[in-house]
Image (tube, rainbow, N blue to C red; front, side, top):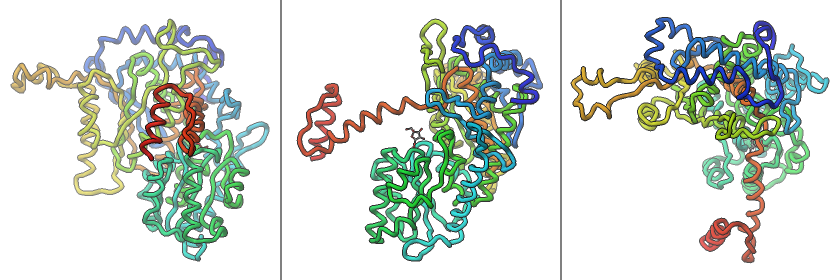
Length: 562
Ligand code: F6P
């Protein structure tokens, strides 16, 4: 990090494995958290009339109000000190500098290069990667423009009208989220569909009303080996060939996005129709790489570049702003504060914008595949029950408001769990309709207010609430939330919002001393499934050597299936 941020850093333990909880800054923060136990948000707001404007920060069109978090100015200073002690700035510089900070996969983590302007240089292993990034972007733009203009014709000469992205995890969730988020600026004459699940229903329902002659499949897979994606791609090929009856149709109806040219060619897709990326792009950090081809087709190359500019603006902010004004640093610290020091286990993300309906699902992979780790970078256990242990990644979940209000908000207001909330809202609707937007915004402001201040027994008494009903109608309040407010949901704002969470995850990882960029936890299930497939498919009754439960389930499945 440079400028202000660098001058603030005084790293006590940049990359070592010293237990985080032994750091003086950690211990001070823990003591401070205990001292705040009885302080409520009511107290804090009463003591400081300027709190609501003081505990805020703003960058890249995003205004962050974190005044309704359970913290004080001292907390903030301690958390900033903790971030410095944990080497957040040094680690960020190592990321931006192309070091192999994904130590278990020996990979660099350079998604920031995907949105660097042409004029920038970012080096990995002595090579500037930015020209390669822009070469792919240009190739994507050519493809997207041909499809949008109707110049990309299928095997029978009909223009492509439907684009189906086949991918899963990071090769699906980002494009799904972005295509929905930016639907307002998308080409409505094109239909975008997404197939991810290996459940055949996903593919069958996605294509049932489509004309193969007008359909283009984008097979998106970093590795091009993922079971689900390969199964869906193979069904797509069969579906196209069944209708068009000519292998030559594949070239017109399939493109690939991958780092694995060999596997793409082996599948039968011409590598001239392959859009590449690099192993320094993690799947969950790839929506702005070629994995975003479907997004670019939907919103056009200019819209996509606008989104990249939003990402880049947040990268620059993250790299240069002082920690106490730095949105990703603040968001990361808030997650650490709530999870590790105040004991919350989940964070709800509640966008008050229907276009962001899939944003929580997207964030689940970003945050939970990144921070769902139980050993340090050096491989030492982080056991929250052991002396000096601590909790790491919280569970992220959510739904758009106001729908969630009529479903799970009850528990957030009155349940026994404290669930910090991130509210996301926009001052202007992309679909102004009567009073709708003011109603929507009134609700988001009201929810944060109700969570923070609740409703006391005294207030209820003043409303003549019968005594027996009072406990049921009391809201404890003191429930933390942050509100992110932007002017409107544009491609640039979406880019900044995603980069905000990406870097907030980075900050959490640096503080918890974990590797946010690997995902070994998804491997075992894949391996076991690979072993079970032949046991399900064999004509002979297989000899099963699993545990008694798995054996019985497999036998029952084979029997029921007939
Ligand atoms: O199973 C987890 C995972 O490896 C994710 O990290 C990744 O986004 C997803 O699978 C898809 O991988 P690929 O793009 O290689 O098909």
